[in-house]
Image (tube, rainbow, N blue to C red; front, side, top):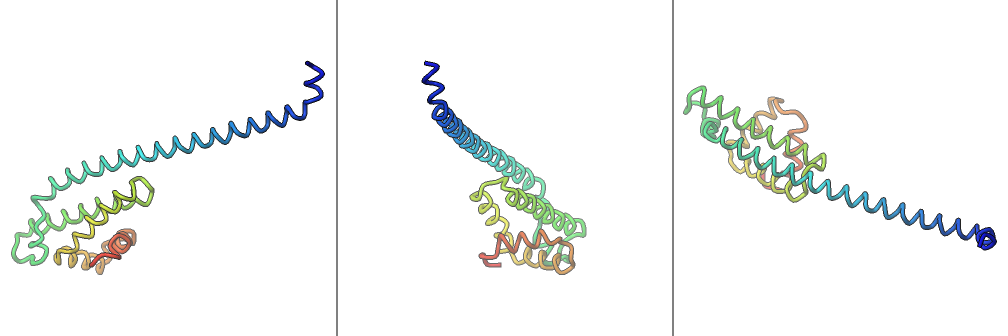
Length: 158
């Protein structure tokens, strides 16, 4: 037997090398699969939390946000105008954080699209669109927020 091993040593080493390579490739494949599953689970957890945060945000800002106070400030008390502007600002901040999550692949493409649609629908209200335009013109919004609207709403009516 030792004679056979000595005679076939090169073949044995070659077979062992190929088997080692196969085991390594399979290991990498399993690792990649596990990372993909983990990414999907993380995205699902992020999406759940974002939905929860949005529900909570709507409960807080819903009663305070009056678009009529933004369209014509003379029809509302000063505090109502301030509350409405702050509420819209909070809503835009929320969407900007979702935008950042999307940029970091922290949410799925489908969820990103849903959130973008919701965000862009805000601008169907002329008061919101005018408020946004005034904030941009006054340079109150940073480039990232303006990019968000451009990217998310470019194919939608603005």
